[in-house]
Length: 213
Image (cartoon, rainbow, N blue to C red; front, side, top):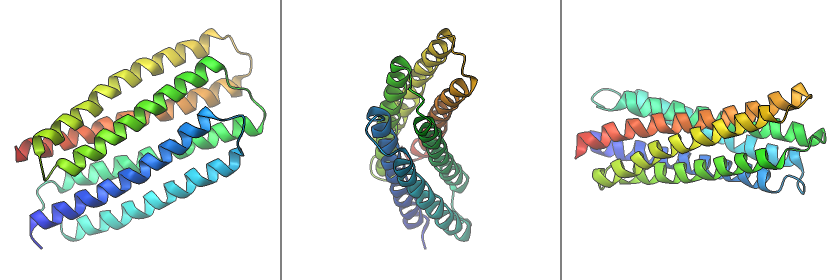
């Protein structure tokens, strides 16, 4: 198999995994937006199912890359992207689980904090959308792929600012329930880390795109 066909196959599979990741993020977004009118554990079960599917896809693609690694120029970058996408899926799963625990214990989430989490999720959705487009364009239009990847990198800075605002708001509330604080902080940490991982993956795409320009 030629390297060109192999890279197309890898990039197509990375797109498919990223689309699943987009679905997972949208479920969490809807959960945050309508957390008073849903079955929390049912929503978590849906997210967990997507996460498990992503993990299976990750191992299949990883095995494929390993088998054809000889002569594959960007294999290390592809593997890093693949590992990062799996970690994002696991972060979103963990965040959703913690949110479901809070709601099942009738912990009411502060409106300002909830809104900040929703906005962070919205930006992660936008980031994944740019990331998918960057992957799609790698072999078609590397310059436009590069630009889409750069948009992911810019969004990481915006999410960092939102994360800092959320953290400040959380500690300004002077809440006495330590478990409540830690659960919310962990949800925010998981989302912020997810965007860091997407940014790292977008960096890798810029390297691949630059080679092809």
